[in-house]
Image (tube, rainbow, N blue to C red; front, side, top):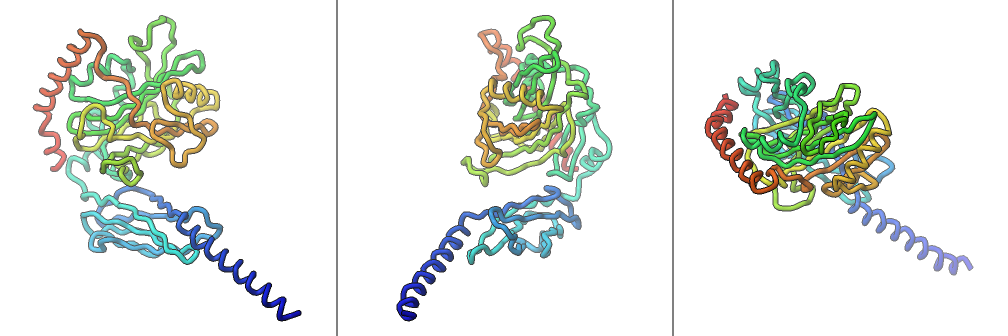
Length: 368
């Protein structure tokens, strides 16, 4: 009887153990390591703290860190990257799950110690523009106190923008709140010798009954400012996979009426600037404002999705009073409509080329 029991039970037990081993082993292929950093760039002798986490496991395995070039950057067992010299380095996080080794790479941008111009701009704004090294090494408008705060915004500005060599994609979102009509506008594209992006919020009382295309909106009062978390991505390869895009910079999370960022560079094609993408989260002052903004985003053509994980392009996800969106291809035209409008836009573009000619010294100045 005992021999029969052993002949039956032991093989079944062995099959169960082998099956569980196979499940764990195959499941390891489905695990991903995510890496977060306290900053995106650093100068020589500065540090970046990386944090790695394996998704889908109850107990976090030990993470092994390595650098692709230790003459440029070294990383210790705690994920602290120390910059040794200028250059490029890729930091790799490796872990073992279910007997399988998984890893992911994190490119760390190792910035120049700082040009004279950038050092000055990081300390004192020039025409309200500053330079930031902590979140990717980019230029931005000193948004809360800039002169643009007092002139509002309307679509006519978008039509005139090519006159000063600003050719970009934009999208407007309209929604009502607190007896006013609000406008969220997103921009991305070329700004003279730079490329970059913007997110702004405006409102009007809507007492004159003017159509949105001809109306002027005031910059939102501070009590309406949402908390903005904005990242700017650029397509480096011809493809739509996440690894084909590079995070160029991320703005510090704060309350803004206008959130901007720019880096020196050129586009493969001016319009549409579909190699650029904004990914941002806006946390509104209450749920009602967020609900109305979500309805406006849906009306503008953005797709509503249930989760922020693997969000498709041109979509948004609402979570309480916060809305996360990914915007890339859904755009309005910067070219004025009609025969005369088309001629006007060509004239603005001509003036923009003159601006380009006289502003060609700017990239050279930034190298000082």
